[in-house]
Image (cartoon, rainbow, N blue to C red; front, side, top):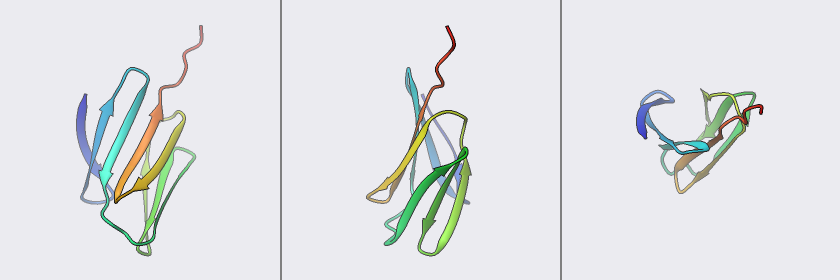
Length: 81
């Protein structure tokens, strides 16, 4: 499934749902000095001296920027058996 919402002002954020994970992706542009981190359910991106924050669903997450594309991988929380 693929849906779209906004990320950081006007940047489109696409959502891809898989059996055991969700991937969010956004083209943030070729910032020369961009970093990304996930802290307590918030993705924090610092690019070209500006800081942006995006809340994400609960669960394990990792985020990275490669070639100007921000990728956020969310693992589905394990259900108790």
